[in-house]
Length: 366
Image (cartoon, one colour):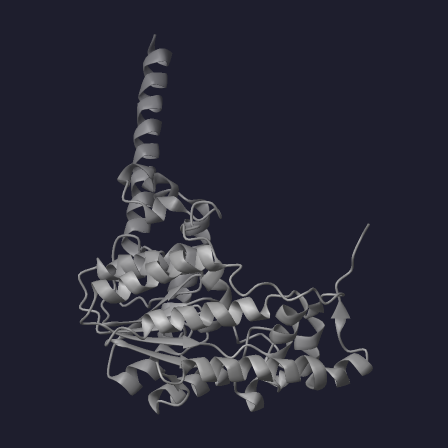
């Protein structure tokens, strides 16, 4: 009989200790909150941001800021401090790797709902975003929706997560108190990457065949949906200044879309988006694509798209000086010049790399 009583006491004690441990774990995750799901950093911790799918949404909801740097992976290597100094603002990043318009507008909506008075938006327009799906892709691509929705009951996936407790929290603590982490370099991936001709050519897999050029209107249905998404953001926030820009992709990218037959369609999409955005007084739009000294120098790139932080800084400096500014009077001519220059790329500038067998071609398997 005494044995049974002792067993019951032990079981009760075990359950109580287990419950206390569970509560303690959840409390620790809540207090440190490495994904910023509940609050901005406490206890002198830094905003250690290196996992955008898990952290970006929380920072937009809980941090203090009045400017946003929006875009795909090519916008990640911006130093927030550059923008803060140049435009007298406090910026954070709203990043989505694919850079699709619907996904970035989703992040913008979260930012505008945060209660912050957002004065400026710096928005990187990737050409591929203009014909992307007009539906957000967070759920379909496996993002942790328990961090995105407002359902407290599924937070258990965050509060009692082994990876969060034993990896993310220690990483945040070390970078806050021991390592000299720079908060302005949020999501920056450039540190361990190589930007040179050999690397960029090695990661460019050129289509074997040159396809006939598509009709320029082939993406019009998706384009119109994306134009509506982006112009709605501008229209709904007339007191916010929007700085849009087309980034400086390398000549390898232009060679690639020429060979897939998409070049004219992409130029058309840019023209239509540009014309729509320039109808608004709170918009400035820049095109950094047609810069021969930049896009033909493959030492600026790690592949056909991703450029070094120095190019991020260059584009910002040009924006500050209103260089490469598009207007309703010059945008068609400017984009036509880029189209003409892409002809020179495929007919002349890419030839030395072909002749020296420095270009990889796609392997077609039967």
